[in-house]
Length: 164
View (tube, rainbow, N blue to C red):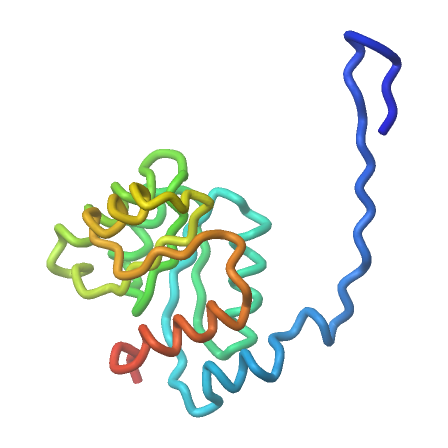
């Protein structure tokens, strides 16, 4: 930490170790959980945290899924209506439409009603879980979500929903 003194703010330096390629790939347990015979899913990732959304997409692509990424709620609704994903992973706190509004819009449209909806959010209180369920989410996960957990959730939700 460095500061010029009171009223001059402060700067912080955070140093993170470099992620090796082998560490960036899903672990054997994640692949085993997802199952190498698991069918590929069409997934929509909607999160206004661009880095997080892209990281999820990389992990999901490495697991063999087709992934589309958007960064706001209105774009999520539009993308879901056009591409009809099997599962949508939605942040709650997004601009334009929040995740609850996205879920409600998708559930109200007969074309998108069958998409499995997963809230992936920093909002983890019981009231948040209840609101997610009322909005139409199938599952509510609190960030950060471990890659193994995400693979397991997709394997469970994707059973019987993947297109051929």
